[in-house]
Length: 528
Ligand code: NAP
Image (tube, rainbow, N blue to C red; front, top):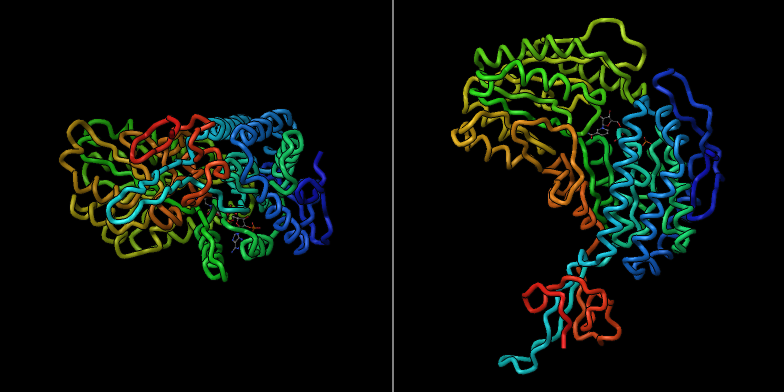
């Protein structure tokens, strides 16, 4: 049942008087549940509890953390149809997508459970003492990854499950040993509360310290700002707009104690069409891209918003086919009326720029909150000169840039802002002849794709979901896959510490049997 209250650790609380509702974009009407925004006192209480919980939680064994994460997954599944129903009513996304995203969320939680149960992720590194060293005796030094402390997670509008309450940021932070306070996304506060109730149940069942998790409601930016400024918070995870992510990053940097903000923000995911591929299969590529641009109403962070090619007959065929095919696709609803307004506004802004031609625009009637897909074209020289053309249009939209030659194409790629992904569509041996293009792209993106589409992010260990700014605020980390745990830890060394007082990961006996680096060699051995 949805209460509309905040979860302050294990307590339900609604002390404030600011309330709000979520919105059903399909019906274009407000949902009935009323949510109460967290007050300053409730925010402080959640952070205080998290700081207390951290003292115990950072020492909890990997197997206990694994049990907690697996129980969260079980409790989310137990929410069954109710969760799917609320998810759909708050986002307009179809049931299939809701179930798929739930599966991904469960999978992520279980992946992190396996990681911490095994234990080697702490990267234990031991350099034993050498009292006979000629210059001076060498001390015994042992390093491992230690959690940062309470983490604030901002739920994402476009992934109500997989990047929100129990999504990748929360799962990785809990796995690392950090208590989590979620700033629930106002567009899907009900979905958030249901998932929060599952986490609370799991925390109680597995006897986690009270405060290991809190979920705070908000209808504006103040709750998030207060959380980021609270001295007890030690790191932030965010997915959303560049404007929001950058504002939080600056806020955190200006604190007396600055803290890391891992923000995954806008991306237009350039796609490079090389000439031979266009000669041989322009129509086929165009068909595939009509689907990718409109997938999920274009509301994926990896949506292909920018397509680059060199002027040729093949590129013209591609543009014509894409324009013809994309308008055949039935428009779909956007997440919220505000997202739809943003889409229309940003699309109009781009279309009004010098040199931009609309090559496809779904012009038939659509229901309120449905998005009309569009494709525009522009010459390379206009694109190079006008930064407005480089901005993300969040929705089913893509811009095709017609470059004069290879040199201009390379210059455009070099001048792009940082991106999550870059895709190259090429035929055999074409990559070898375009090494400069590939190099330029590698400098601008976190993941490069060959002959595919950027949409559809595989959750696995080798995935990089991040990239140079502004795709993310720290390109050294990924927000997807088990490697994302590294955002929430710091390396910590013990020098000459008594063996019995060391954490199990670093003890001579290696009681956990984990893989460690001992005097430069990887081993699961004990130290005699
Ligand atoms: P958003 O505006 O960036 O908001 C994300 C979260 O951050 C919300 O909870 C929001 O709180 C909070 N927030 C925003 N600005 C803040 C600030 N200055 N200080 C503190 N908190 C702040 O993103 P959104 O609401 O999810 O969607 C809006 C737009 O973001 C979309 O139209 C799209 O352009 C972009 N977006 C991009 C991606 C992507 O992957 N590229 C994903 C999602 C969204 P409130 O909602 O309470 O204000």
